[in-house]
Image 1 (tube, rainbow, N blue to C red):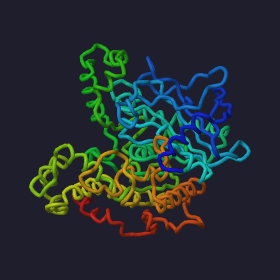
Image 2: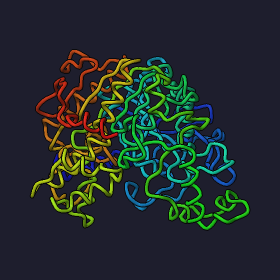
Image 3: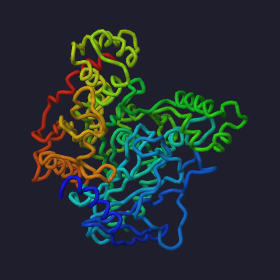
Image 4: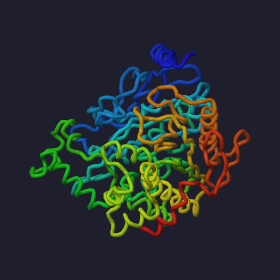
Amino acid sequence: MTQSARPAAITTERHQPSVTAVRTHDGLVRGAAHGGYRTFEGIPYAAPPVGRLRWAPPHRAAHWPGTRDATLPASACPQPAGEVPGGSTDEDCLHLNVTTPDGAGPARPRPVIVWLHGGGFTTGAGSSYDAHRMATRGDVVVVTVNYRLGALGFLAHVGLPGSGTFGLADQQAALRWVRAEIGAFGGDADNVTLAGESAGGYSVCAQLASPAAAGLFDRAIIGSGPCTGRPDRPFAPSSVPPSTARAAGADFAAEAGCGSARDVMACLRRLDVSRLLAAQDTDQQPAHTTPLLPSDPAVAIAAGRFRHVPVLIGDNHDEGNGWAAGIIQAGNPVTPGTWPDVLAAFFPGPGQAKAIAHEYPVHRTDGGPVFGAVIGDADFACPTARAESLLAAHVPVWSYEFADEHAPPLTQGTPPFPLGAPHASELPYLFDLGGRPRDLTPAQHRLADTMIDYWTRFVRTGDPNGPSSPPWPRQTVLSLAPDHIVPTSTVRSRRHCAFWNDLG
């Protein structure tokens, strides 16, 4: 089959499948049977958060009569155009998708992965992640989840119960649905792994630290969402204190035209979604020191106050390169002359820019990669290493660095310098993004299979090791690239962590 023929083959299979039905407590759902696996898409796990339920904790989904069609994904949660073509303004979005291998059933349950998508808590959808390769090769059931995003998911306001954590509450509602319902789809409700990347990875950190999530999952996978993220390092996800969250909420209400209303929340609940999207900031952060998230996950994990389950955690070798390239392409060149000013814009603390420029000097032609290394080390590699150390004091931890410098690009266009293995570049090795087949070399296909083997063995037993893959010792970073999958204690992107720890 030629490369150009693949999408047509997938489209034909997707739109002409046989059907299959499963009974949930809320009613029958009719999914689609494909070659070796079944999918059930757009299943509601909570009531539509509309009207009085806008900015309210998730409520139970209503029962439905007859059989619900679950052969196509439901709407993504409201968001601007981007990952979701055209964006979305549909608040009836609290749905999930189940991919289950053939042979899975109540009599032969499989381990379960619940996947939380990334996107800065502002964009993304569970339906973007076609999980059939992971389900079939790993013999696991995969659940991908939509949760409220942007201001609809993370608005904080005085007197508003659940302020700053509605999206996290949605994730917990989805996990409760999985515990109650996944057995009917062939999943083992007593073996659930919560996994995610970027904002989804940080969500896993938050759920580890949330008492309300106790008992909802048994293992954790954290990709490029270090639990020790900080608001002053803006490229990685983090959480913010209530005062910061409420100030952002007040600014949002004013921008939306409701800041001076007698009842601000009533005013906001009357607005169209498009008006709300236009008023919100680009990225969002959940609030901590709240009933759902009593403390910053970084503080909770440092103190050992988190759900003690096995953890697989890691990041990518060139996490920061995508952001550096975008900033340069937006008209901000990084040269020896501009470098101090560029740094001062992102690291405004006294003396920080000068110290960073000394540690990461820019020469005539290497400005972009150096800027990418600064972002990657400050926001991802070193915080991830710190999180690994804190977690390993209490639970089994396996850590990785994805290091394929020829990973296929996730965006169109030609970057100003080679991006290597930037943020999110590992995802096509685990999923078919947007339902499209991965465009990988034979060596990359083998790496993808190895990664799925590691991930799903960890899901099954809490240990990624097995007879078919190189050994992965605990408390050792595994470097993942097509030409080397080896344990290493000298991963290159972490060589500056002592500097960042001293910088504060």
